[in-house]
Length: 330
Image 1 (cartoon, rainbow, N blue to C red):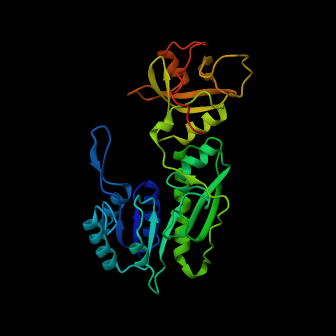
Image 2 (image 1 turned 180 degrees about the horizontal axis):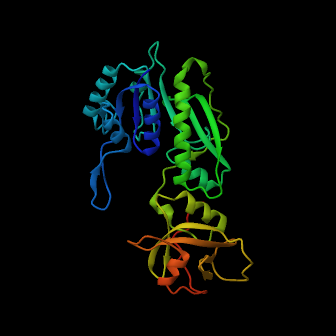
Image 3 (image 1 turned 60 degrees about the horizontal axis):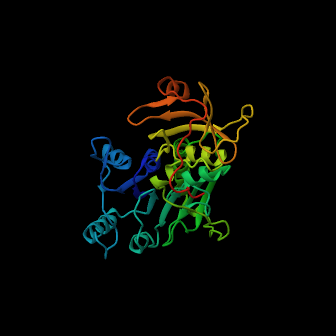
């Protein structure tokens, strides 16, 4: 099958690689423009672009797709490239641009199979930009991938395939991302192997939730929350943006933490107070229960276990981590 593929990050690269591996012809790849990245802030190609160029696939990087928008010239060039690709279908995975109606219409002719989207959740739960993060943050026991036919709404299209997988107690967004990317790649290959085999299923309006884009302001740990909430946020914000705390005026990132399950530590301490610290972790009072912090990072440094951190920081019971100026939203 001839395809147009639209995607940008590693999650999308996995699908593109699988489609290429099984023999589909990718006639055009759309991906986001190169962005500054790293300490030197040099322009860096997306994971999808790198894969496509290595295999000789045509690549277009429009800044926008609205024919009447700020980047109308880019959109017009993309429209021409899509028409020239003469593709049977379009696969969209974490592209980063909203598809206007003209794109959907370009794949709606008889004999074409429309625009298929790989979405990293069990729709209609977690429509939106950050379904993996939000599923972990909310404490969901499972998640999955939905292959849907795109329409003009935000992740509202009819579903073709859906498959779930459990969220492990120690899953971070990084680890869950990799498993969902592999699952999404498998499912889209199944969907395209015989498009006639799948009966589109309209999404229910019951149970709709929105996975709003992650903002760096959410990263600050609010010790007034429960230990379970904080532990989930640490996992959800790994690798981006990384949960942050303040200790004696120094900003730190927390990369590993869990609800304290050891012997009770009698205390009437305020949230944020250190109750115990040893090589196994730093136990901190929260609004409900205690949190065992196991992996931290100082500015410009590497990630340290609690044992490594304590060798360079004299942390004793009674010291306190700072509270954010504004209580974080649940």
